[in-house]
Length: 262
Image (tube, rainbow, N blue to C red; front, top):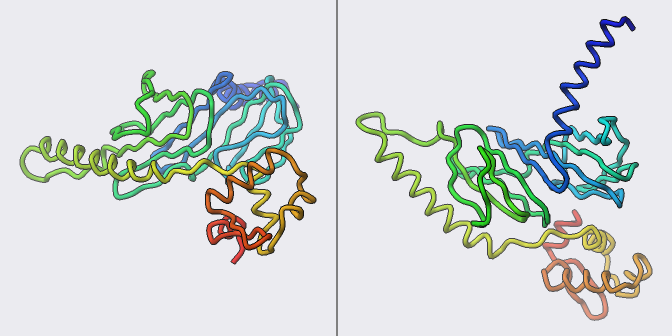
């Protein structure tokens, strides 16, 4: 390879990899939302455990780098990455799963329980409608939260209906107020129904039961008998994913949907 080609490659790698290393400091997750609802998630992790939980089951264009910007090998199982390295890593991926649209109202929803700073950057020209907590601050054009679960609703300014004749300002103000009231009412009800995300162990228990009927002893033989296993089974029963049929445990309709059985 010629010296000029090497220099060009080095410059290209600098501009591709270097921004990824700067997107998130330790303990910070950065979520950047595009106008079509796709989100880019960037986070820096200091791994003591090779398992990392993502905020979606279907991440795309996953890139895992070490602290020097070198790619790392990993495997994926649902929303979990298993990275073949410990220490500091930088993870970047894309997903459309965090946003949905009702009418002209977009909502970003992060249901995972994350105990660290989350920086959200919404599309340019958005109009903020509301969020799940008043405990946030603005830093430039970014919304800074102290953790999740959280949701934040907004509209894109070009999608707000305008009057063709006369002044559009009163109609615009009225539209925004109406949207805020509607969204507040919807999410007041939705927040009551918001569930804690299932843990990796709880999903494993649901998958083990599947379309079978298992006793507690059957489950203990498969995954062991521990306080966490017993606690997970109780949570699944109280949350309506599992029910007791005599001495046996079976999945409810909700649990069968998670397990993918009919």
